[in-house]
Length: 261
Image (cartoon, rainbow, N blue to C red; front, side, top):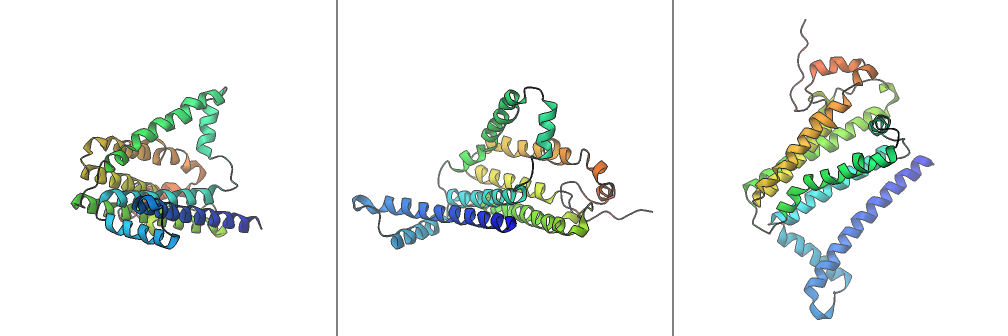
């Protein structure tokens, strides 16, 4: 019953968010074009929204927002599903232990203040990409291609890991098939591609200065809260992981290394 309730709430949340977004775009778009007579009926509003998207997909701003919404929505739903009913992430538990006592006060700058500053820096490509409408160029096309690669690695990697963990026979084992056979962190690599694709969109709008965002994300994924932190003690928890490290690249995808005698 608890599992069904969980799935129902997740499905309901997705439905509400998607339906609300469609309705909001439809009403706002229709309201702008309706003049003093007010917005047209809902059917006309939805039609106006579709026309607006169709006409504006030739520019990177709506396309950029679409990519951002799809990526963030998928990630939010997945993290909600994965962590529903679970305890606090062990990485946050470690932060809590390392900064006790008075962690309640310290969290204001260690967690929340730091996250706010990082969010501002990381979002710089969003500001640059929204600086103005323009025809699609080669950089925009390259950005979409890179975004698709990142989205596939992120979503498919998460799906493969979830299916692997759902099988009780795999308890204590290491996933080494699918995307996990070419990189030990396909989801992190996918995230890396996503943020560099956002930068390409910003670069297309002249926002070369926002490169601090993907560089910062790359550093965090590789050296701070991503690969480095996750693999710090994973060998102690799962001895099989040592062999996995010898055969498989940590981040950038590559064919598995052959065992040497």
